[in-house]
Length: 168
Image (cartoon, rainbow, N blue to C red; front, side, top):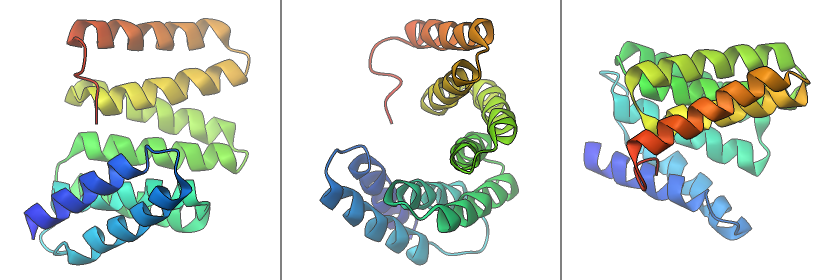
């Protein structure tokens, strides 16, 4: 079950990076299947990862309510499974959904928590995703100095990691 879950999750995650509406729709189906096929007990990092990717796919599809529910579930499972980088990724998604709902304060709080948690966990892809959204939201709110500081820190971190290491 672990391998099937991990493969399904990664396939769905890569498909949602596409510009193709067809691939994104298929990613929702694949991510949903990965979640369904992953045993619920005990909580595992890969179960949380599958849930977090499903939430992202639903968000892209426009199902914000379902996306929020799955992101919150992913956050809780990640916490139970001691998977801080997956929890941080779920926090970014929750922040994106808060921003869509018009709650900038909550979004910034989620992005900040995600950024700090991902940096501590040393998972570059999640750290950069959080940094990007935090900087963008700060910029949208007119906090240019803070936006620039976060963006610069993200660029510095990516540069130290080297080319290709920030991928999925």
